[in-house]
Image (cartoon, rainbow, N blue to C red):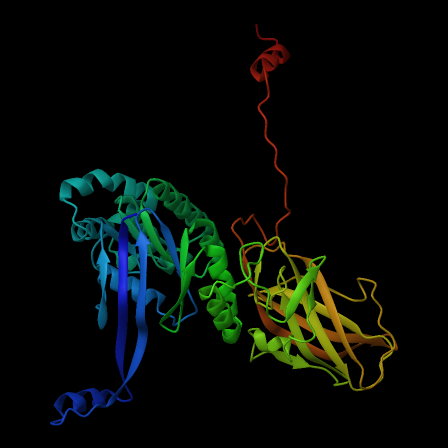
Length: 463
């Protein structure tokens, strides 16, 4: 298969100066003294994209995803290495890239078209499709500096996707705009993908990665980590997010030697101190489990906590359906929230709770041991308990916050022994979102009604 994009040993180094004057001092120094330090945005990156493939690039912030896209599109020049691109490229990078803010929408369409190598006549033929897709009305005749961010991205994406490129490169630009326009964009991307257009995309939306990508490239801190199927790369990405670098390195080393064990589902290995699963609840290996579950999770350093101190939530875990400790969960899978509590005083009947909220602070769901009929009483000073809540994830794809607490009732009054607000982040990955906060998991059937027109005629008495 012929390659559309070849990235070979690409390194991008920036010079960082502590003070602006240091740049001038360095340039004028008679002995070429260096006043800068080097920052490697990319380090020896190599991968290829075959023609007709949809390839995703994933990684944490600062991993070099946007930098490599800019190098591929020619916006940046690599410090070392080379990039080969075979085909006409249309790129949607940072909002505003390639647009003249003083030009009208129409003028920007023709200017960008000419930059991509299209003649005025060719752009005349494409103009109506671009305008229909953007759907910004008369604003297309106004300077783009007067546009809202939503109108801007509509026009930018409409231009990028309707010039019928051989290669489409998309950065996080689709995160701007309303949900209906985003859905429209993804439908159009699916159409051109089926026509054989090569697509290279960067996104934090793991649902889109799982749904659209034939291959995924995983980066971390400017370096190539791995490439492969979407499901397996998302599993490796989870380990990076949870700072499980030793586990990641062991898995990659095992794959290189051909001894990696294959997990089920989207791919992956449940070797994070978890030996299996019973009824969706992980069963941990006592010999290999980490000393603290929370060490392998992204814990909020600015969490709010309070209580009278008679109980302490000393550890917590969030496990996916295969028993991996992770902040990323797949919509539809069973997952487990685990709390470990140490008591510093006798308590008659403690209650363990969890709550999931959205980013605005709205409580979406939660439960506790009292609601679930799991009474724990009494406890003594020095006791430790571990409580697990296992359930199915039906929330829509998105970002959420997990809170947990140990409370109780004494003399008819509600008492908080220890409460942790927004202690863990929780990302739900979905390739099918419905309307609202959670999925009703509807089962849909549709069938054609036979002789429907004849029955209507008989009922209305028309002959």
